[in-house]
Length: 204
Image (tube, rainbow, N blue to C red; front, side, top):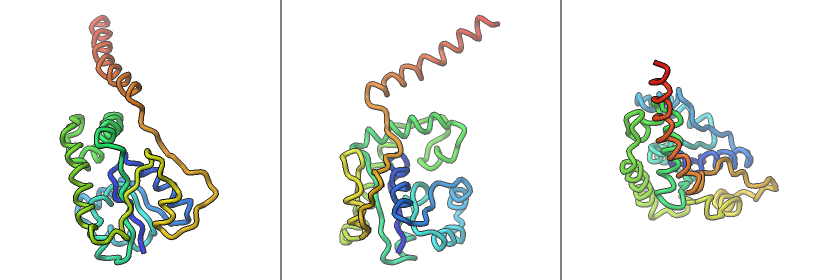
């Protein structure tokens, strides 16, 4: 049985990875070379990784749940979610714009590097969630939808996986800035390029 996190990045996948490692799974998370294999359609590399590890999260696994399900019947799938699509979009935008040179992250969401598309991000998140729910609609025992932001944690995860709740504190990996902090970051993002241009103009 494989355990596969099929939520998009920035939905709590790092927290899920930490949980699965604590629970003793041999875990595989985001890997540049592995993502390149997926982008090239190298399913031999995908299958070799599936055979070598117990659990997985982040790209390209959200796109591969059907393949994993066919290759490893009886596996468990975990759809990590944000409290609403807008929170996901906000978090993804902050993440990708900090990594403008990392083209893989942009391509994973179908965007051109440096051109964050809010509507596309929201649509892809919603469509993925709907597609996963439709695929597993008659198999609720194989899919767990979970949102760390609403207070869900060890109890629901361990019940789904049939594991005892560990004594280790729940490992919240990252936190998205709240609305006030996000607005501050947005103002800084808009103001900083103008400030730099003024400095360059004065220097010339």
